[in-house]
Picture 1 (cartoon, rainbow, N blue to C red):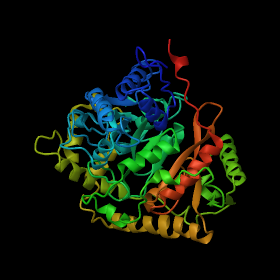
Picture 2: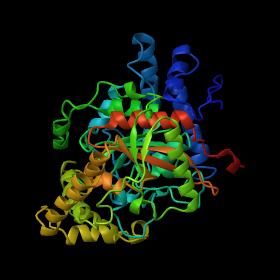
Picture 3: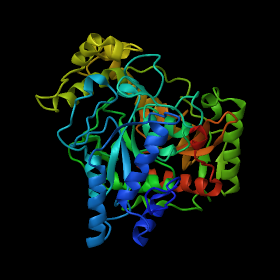
Length: 492
């Protein structure tokens, strides 16, 4: 695909290594790469199939790319992310000319005073912040019955593999933009499936890290106990490079204290194509497979067979004893109000919204634009939780979640069967991993006849990302299931 008058670099499915090689040879510049992505966004996201995954473009992206090109000429590259264009989910702060709205019209003019910690890290690594991706409004805390990938500010994100099927949420725009080659990689955030779900439905790799591995400072929150940012990319290698670029200790995020000394120097060092040899992987058949279609089950079982052929010991079943005992938890509802109000209070006196109550009032004043699906969950969070995290049910649920999902859940099954990882179909185990605060990596595993992708997710214990990256990379390299969506056929 031509991206400039005299440049013929195939942008589709290009990896970060491909881009760096083209930079080094003089075949490509970061500015030309940014222009290429902007053209694809115009042709396929805002025209053609109207995927609607990109919410805003950084007006300074080309200037930043030019600066990275010049720095490369004078000093050489900073590292693997130098000059690489990435998108951020719209709940990640940037101290620039783009607002951080979480998809809400009430926050359409809300500009953060500074970059989120992980954005500073990306910029320090030389990445070009291309723009922000659309998302499920307030990370699906807006209301009930609203489709994943919808926001009042951005509209509906569409799945490029089949526009009649869901995108997954809430990092829908990040997943679609990566899948459709609108950026090299993207940042998503997860509270309970919001990276893993769109990664599976968009056939991309998603790393949901241990809570506390990456800083949450400067990210519009949902839950203080479960939120985490994470990378989404087309390959495990690119996701690992993004993860590495975002790491760093932030003393403003108390969750990071537990990970001191547990992070490797380089996550890319664990990209081992033989990583499945000798690994013990458990399959929790009870409960997690009940909603699968026969076609999805066949894709999953094929993936398990491939892992066995590649040298893994498959423990099947390795059931999680507490799978059927976890229930609705009030943790997210209670933490959302407290976390959001704390975030809004730090935006400064000129911020358009300072409280959740003010956002609800704004929506009531602009119902046609903001309340297509209502705001039931926002109202419940405001009026049915104290915001002080002293509610009896909240305190009970928080302790129960840790016991059932971590201690008696993932920890217990991994210890009983001496597992390196638990393997879930798609994102069906995301709720367990989220409540435990544990990491997962989603990898493409195939496609259904109607087009929608289907993946598998490896889950392990806290700070075991290196192990998960090794397993996911080996599976990816042994299968190469991912294929790009056929966007061109939808263009006149």
